[in-house]
Length: 115
Image (tube, rainbow, N blue to C red; front, side):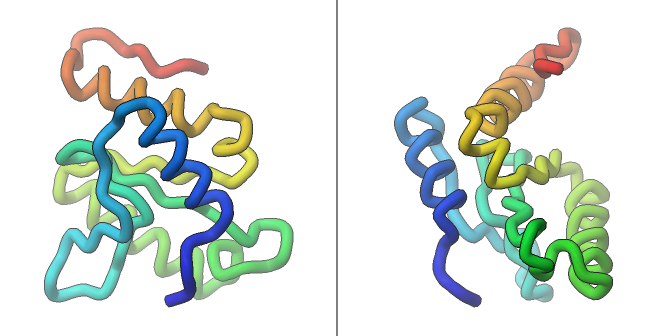
């Protein structure tokens, strides 16, 4: 595994500035090597989908298969998975989605997700 990307470092900074507690490189299952870039709260997982413009792992066949399996396992375990791109992090949209997901988790009768 390589070090954190610039986008991950920026999202780390944004979450800290917003006062949102999180964990980096969260591994939800001891019996699997899957990791998510961030865990926010107890049930929100964030995966930064880097490499889209340079044919990185997230856009290759085997990478898509792996990401789909990881996301489906997380959803089956009750996690909310938010895949975000570096551009969405730079624009601040990813942070807005994370904040909305946190609010939605606290008050499921309303849907505050910005569109």
